[in-house]
Image 1 (cartoon, rainbow over the protein chains, first blue to last red):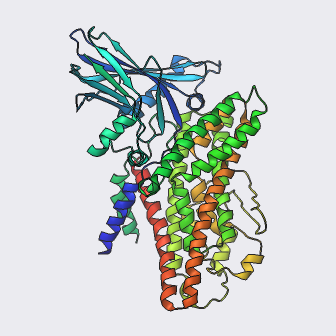
Image 2: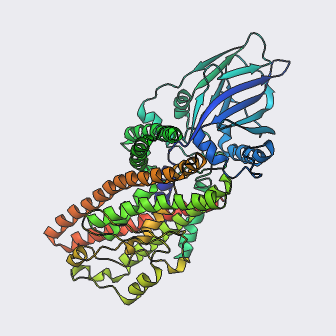
Image 3: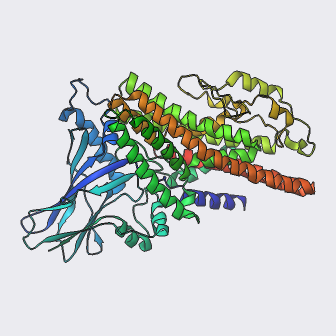
Length: 214
Length: 356
């Protein structure tokens, strides 16, 4: 009886202890979808520019030779840590054809660039298997936990690389969700990658939604 | 007992497998309980989250504009204060621990407020110490600094659990069997020894009852002593003892609770400090983080006051009855609060260790 009570209370405790939402990383994002000659999508390229404050923290202690500049060599280990850590968060990336989530492989091509006080992370996520865009493809880049706030660079939200000429893109700004739904989404732990069905749609409208039609 | 604790930790481990990882491998999100997200006030907390975000951005913008505009100092301090207030209003485990601690110990309102401000300032100091050693002295990378704060976080969870064990022990098996006799309590010998020996491991806090808490800090890393020597509270009195109202207030008895909350620096404070340092505005950064702590202290003190007042009212009601039943209920509340601190500490500790 006591044991059952303990387990039950711990379960409740566990379910309510999501990491809290203090946004401390602000990203200006540009997205790219890469197509092969047959018109299938093969990869997603992320270009994420960090805010000044997070940049200064990220580059702290990296100027090993003290020349006041950050070389590619000096930035390489950080880029590696970045992409390896992002894996657990599924790269904040959700590419879907219709309603089907398209799996990606860990990036092999990635680097950091430091320019006028801001760090930019470039990385390519290869799709596990190339996939035809279908009637409707959507891409979301979003942190439901709000530790990272994504903003998309106006006019450069999405670029299609090598896509058939018939493909067009649209970008839909996040919907203003009602507070209750937003809080429900924010309460979901970061390590729970799949949102409950009833919240998935709501979450989609919280993120900037990039659509591709071919 | 130990087997039970281990069992609990094992049970919790899978649920917390990745309790607080960091998406970029640097700067771990501030972990904590977000019980409130699911509660009736969630709309309020969503608003708070939005406010936090905009204040943080305004704050970092003010910091980068600082070099050009010396008047930015006032703006920056104001923003830091506001950010501190909002940051603390959001859900977080520190406040839960302090409120539960006050419920369990029955500390007075003034002590509660002093503990709240002390924990906020200890947290600011931890951030300042981490960045002073990490960035100013050793020039380590963000990855190393994040590891240091993650270790401090684990220390914080362990301290919370230890605090819970101690409170629970003193509530159930301690000298509180004589609760029905409201005689002024006297420290026992072992308690006095603990006080004398432990102090605050490099962080001495003292306050006065009259006016604002007087905080005296001695610099130095707040490194935890071996766990075996920790004591959370020496079983201080429940109803306000007239003598404690006139004697100078010492926060020493509450130091585990204060350290437990304050030993883990906020990622935001660390980022702001490193940013200030990179702008050659180190002292401005420290000022900003101290202002944040003041703001945080205000919010935590309000919550602490609510906890103390709620208990006072309950105490008055039960005293009017003077019934043994009412006393038993009060005792139950204290034990529940102490058990809550222990369970919370174990849960977070299990999660953090599993995530290593």
